[in-house]
Amino acid sequence: MPKPRFPTTRMRRNRYDEWTRRLVAESQLTANDLIWPVFVHNGHEPKIDIPSLPGVSRLSISQLVTEVGRAKSFGIPLVAVFPVIDPVLKTDEAEEAYNADNLICRAVAAIKETHQGIGVMCDVALDPFTSHGHDGLLRDGYIVNDDTLEVLCKQAIVQARSGCDVIAPSDMMDGRVGAIRAALDAEGFENIRIMSYAAKYASGLYSPFRDAVGSASNLNGASKNTYQMDPANSDEALREAALDIEEGADMLMVKPGLFYLDILQRIKKKFAMPTFAYQVSGEYAMLKLASQQGLVDGEQVLREALLSFKRAGANGILTYAALDAAEKLAG
Image 1 (cartoon, rainbow, N blue to C red):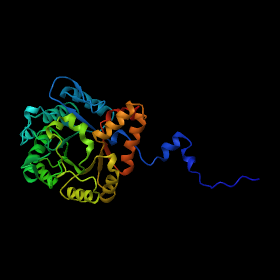
Image 2 (image 1 turned 90 degrees about the horizontal axis):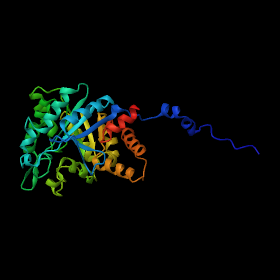
Image 3 (image 1 turned 180 degrees about the vertical axis):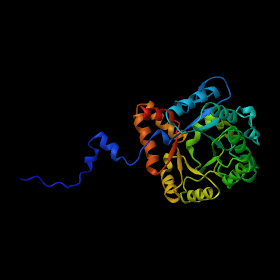
């Protein structure tokens, strides 16, 4: 009997060779897509391991400068620097956040003095600097909005003066993008970009980050639900993004990333703005720990995770694995 005629279209043809798979790939991942979040501490010890973030360390300023040089050599375009503030400098009013000689400002200045051609992003929020661990000023048990904006603007200005290229407000206060844009422009920093944490959710995935910057003990289990977004909401994220664009944001971010790919895709499709995803500490730690336990191939699942962000529309990804991923891509 003659064999039954197979359909003309065979989807597996374009999967037959490795070169064909590369040729028809719809999403590409390169070092240009990676932003490296890195922690800096004020001591002389080059590296201090962070137990809840396997493979991630707090770096001294001199070690940070060295590692940023490696990131640049692998083609990473931007690093995001987060400070580990001495507890004695933390206050209810977060005065250290706008000290022109604070840790983050000294770290940024050291990077910019040594390396050209790589950008530096600074987080604008008060949680590393407050004694209570919140992103804003606390009044009678509530995070006040407008008083917080005044401090955030001061914080953004000292960071810009130190050489920061991208200001990234992560506090989720209403109106903060517009206030910071106006403050930067008034000081002659009209070319400093703002990457807004447009949709930052009140997630349980931030715990290792809070360990890393030392704010977990200050927060003491308190909720950030009155200013970070409800994970149940999607339409609200579009409103947040629209407001940030109207106020002058140059780029948008969705945080967390992997659990919120639908939000990322909706924002990118709706606004066609440069949009980024943050593979947050909990997401990164889950992948690393699963790999260490031999449950998954760590390199393969990391690549899948990063490609999922690109597939959903991200222009780039903040990931603690950026250095490792860029090195693999370069190889």
